[in-house]
Length: 124
Image 1 (spheres, helix red, strand yellow):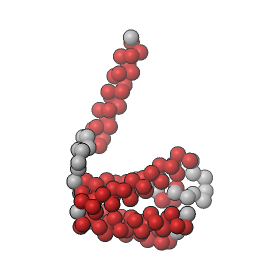
Image 2: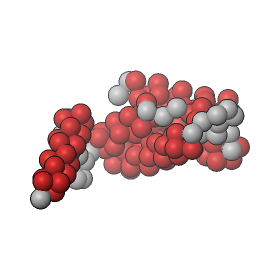
Image 3: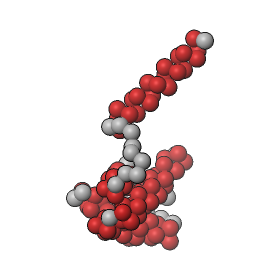
Image 4: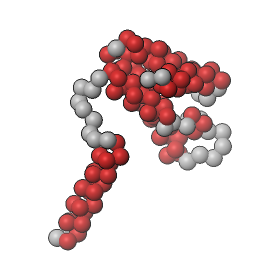
Protein backbone atom coordinates (compact mmCIF):
# COMPACT_ATOMS: atom_id res chain seq x y z
CA UNK A 1 0.00 0.00 0.00
CA UNK A 2 2.82 2.39 0.82
CA UNK A 3 4.50 1.69 -2.56
CA UNK A 4 1.23 2.46 -4.36
CA UNK A 5 0.89 5.75 -2.50
CA UNK A 6 4.50 6.74 -3.24
CA UNK A 7 4.01 5.91 -6.94
CA UNK A 8 0.81 7.92 -7.09
CA UNK A 9 2.46 10.93 -5.44
CA UNK A 10 5.52 10.73 -7.69
CA UNK A 11 3.34 10.53 -10.79
CA UNK A 12 1.24 13.47 -9.66
CA UNK A 13 4.37 15.49 -8.96
CA UNK A 14 5.67 14.71 -12.45
CA UNK A 15 2.43 15.82 -14.11
CA UNK A 16 2.37 18.98 -11.98
CA UNK A 17 5.98 19.81 -12.84
CA UNK A 18 5.31 19.31 -16.56
CA UNK A 19 2.23 21.51 -16.33
CA UNK A 20 4.18 24.28 -14.60
CA UNK A 21 7.08 24.10 -17.06
CA UNK A 22 4.86 24.23 -20.14
CA UNK A 23 2.56 26.90 -18.82
CA UNK A 24 -0.53 24.73 -18.63
CA UNK A 25 -2.22 22.12 -20.71
CA UNK A 26 -2.58 22.40 -24.46
CA UNK A 27 -6.04 23.27 -25.76
CA UNK A 28 -7.72 20.94 -28.20
CA UNK A 29 -8.43 22.71 -31.45
CA UNK A 30 -5.74 25.35 -30.86
CA UNK A 31 -5.22 28.19 -33.28
CA UNK A 32 -2.96 28.36 -36.31
CA UNK A 33 -0.75 30.66 -34.23
CA UNK A 34 -0.40 27.93 -31.61
CA UNK A 35 0.64 25.51 -34.36
CA UNK A 36 3.19 27.98 -35.73
CA UNK A 37 4.65 28.57 -32.27
CA UNK A 38 4.80 24.80 -31.77
CA UNK A 39 6.70 24.41 -35.04
CA UNK A 40 9.11 27.13 -33.98
CA UNK A 41 9.58 25.55 -30.56
CA UNK A 42 10.35 22.21 -32.22
CA UNK A 43 12.93 23.90 -34.45
CA UNK A 44 14.45 25.74 -31.51
CA UNK A 45 14.92 22.46 -29.68
CA UNK A 46 16.34 20.65 -32.71
CA UNK A 47 20.07 20.27 -33.29
CA UNK A 48 20.32 19.49 -37.00
CA UNK A 49 23.88 18.22 -36.61
CA UNK A 50 22.33 15.17 -34.94
CA UNK A 51 20.02 14.28 -37.85
CA UNK A 52 22.67 12.36 -39.77
CA UNK A 53 25.68 12.58 -37.54
CA UNK A 54 29.16 12.19 -38.87
CA UNK A 55 30.61 11.81 -35.39
CA UNK A 56 29.55 10.02 -32.27
CA UNK A 57 25.97 10.81 -31.36
CA UNK A 58 23.71 8.60 -29.32
CA UNK A 59 20.88 6.98 -31.25
CA UNK A 60 18.38 8.54 -28.84
CA UNK A 61 19.66 12.03 -29.69
CA UNK A 62 19.39 11.32 -33.41
CA UNK A 63 15.88 9.95 -33.03
CA UNK A 64 14.82 12.96 -30.96
CA UNK A 65 16.16 15.37 -33.59
CA UNK A 66 14.33 13.49 -36.36
CA UNK A 67 11.05 13.60 -34.44
CA UNK A 68 11.44 17.31 -33.71
CA UNK A 69 12.08 17.98 -37.39
CA UNK A 70 9.02 15.96 -38.38
CA UNK A 71 6.97 17.71 -35.70
CA UNK A 72 8.06 21.14 -36.92
CA UNK A 73 7.11 20.13 -40.46
CA UNK A 74 3.65 18.88 -39.45
CA UNK A 75 2.86 21.83 -37.19
CA UNK A 76 4.00 24.37 -39.77
CA UNK A 77 1.76 22.73 -42.39
CA UNK A 78 -1.15 22.80 -39.91
CA UNK A 79 -0.50 26.47 -39.18
CA UNK A 80 -0.51 27.34 -42.89
CA UNK A 81 -3.70 25.34 -43.43
CA UNK A 82 -5.38 27.36 -40.68
CA UNK A 83 -3.99 30.75 -41.65
CA UNK A 84 -2.27 31.50 -44.99
CA UNK A 85 -0.01 34.07 -43.32
CA UNK A 86 2.00 31.12 -41.96
CA UNK A 87 2.65 29.77 -45.47
CA UNK A 88 6.23 31.18 -45.64
CA UNK A 89 7.12 29.26 -42.47
CA UNK A 90 5.56 26.07 -43.83
CA UNK A 91 7.33 26.49 -47.16
CA UNK A 92 10.76 27.01 -45.58
CA UNK A 93 10.41 23.99 -43.30
CA UNK A 94 8.99 21.90 -46.15
CA UNK A 95 11.94 22.78 -48.39
CA UNK A 96 14.38 21.88 -45.60
CA UNK A 97 12.52 18.64 -44.88
CA UNK A 98 12.33 17.61 -48.54
CA UNK A 99 15.99 18.45 -49.15
CA UNK A 100 16.98 16.43 -46.09
CA UNK A 101 15.00 13.45 -47.38
CA UNK A 102 16.56 13.80 -50.84
CA UNK A 103 20.22 14.02 -49.87
CA UNK A 104 20.20 12.01 -46.60
CA UNK A 105 22.36 14.68 -45.05
CA UNK A 106 22.27 18.16 -43.59
CA UNK A 107 23.90 20.03 -46.43
CA UNK A 108 24.08 23.74 -47.20
CA UNK A 109 20.59 23.67 -48.74
CA UNK A 110 19.02 22.21 -45.60
CA UNK A 111 20.91 24.66 -43.39
CA UNK A 112 19.82 27.60 -45.56
CA UNK A 113 16.14 26.66 -45.33
CA UNK A 114 16.34 26.01 -41.58
CA UNK A 115 17.94 29.43 -41.13
CA UNK A 116 15.09 30.96 -43.13
CA UNK A 117 12.49 29.14 -41.01
CA UNK A 118 14.20 30.24 -37.80
CA UNK A 119 14.31 33.82 -39.05
CA UNK A 120 10.56 33.68 -39.69
CA UNK A 121 10.08 32.22 -36.21
CA UNK A 122 12.03 35.08 -34.68
CA UNK A 123 9.48 37.49 -36.16
CA UNK A 124 6.40 35.67 -34.83
